[in-house]
Image 1 (cartoon, rainbow over the protein chains, first blue to last red):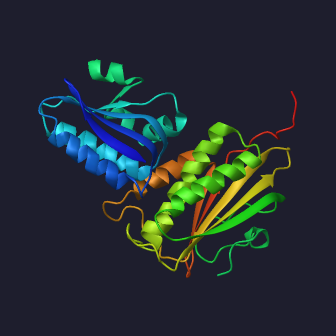
Image 2 (spheres, rainbow over the protein chains, first blue to last red):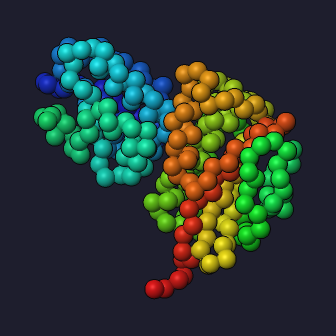
Image 3 (tube, rainbow over the protein chains, first blue to last red):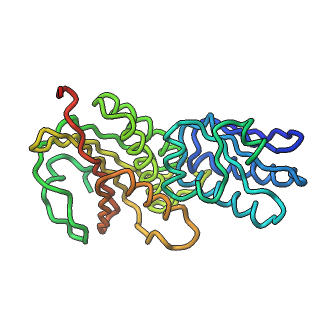
Length: 114
Length: 170
């Protein structure tokens, strides 16, 4: 798994690729913490479109990011980009993560928002 | 405890709880692998499961879910069974995976994947673990999830939904 945090005008984007499992999820958590620290009013977008595996430790990290977003009050809900890949969408649906983050099919759409 | 084999897997009532694995259907394509109990094991187990399912021409959508279930079961063994920490690489424990295809009387096939360890089993809701989601993912990926706790360890059986034989034509 690779993860990097990219700052844009209206969004801070966390770009992830590869497999998010117990081994790699801690690095995703670090990146998310870093992104929240840099947010200053911007929206947080987590781009999972290059992720090919998402297990429970990754789902937990995303849930925690969603709660952190809520806790910070004025911040808009966390936005997640997924493409059509079932190995990412399916687990998110099974645990109900799709109900607590905003889901988008492209990074551009996610940055623009609803 | 000997690694599970197809002989041992048959109708045997288990000593501790569980309804036991469904008996008697002929099993083929058996494959087995033992992995050192560390945090890379889940990734190796996913690769092994993926190759085996592809070799048996299992439908891709179901394969993806089974790979996820295998990954979760192995993670449980490492994290909760053996209590291996993230930086620990020389744990003596093993996680053993056994893959079978079960040939059902109606010609359909299903996959039975066993994930065994010799660690302790702790209840899924003990504290802030990932296991609640892990169990949910394993259940949703399978027709049946059996967890056998024994005196020596834990064995998880993942039983897939049946699929039609690959060569059958409409």
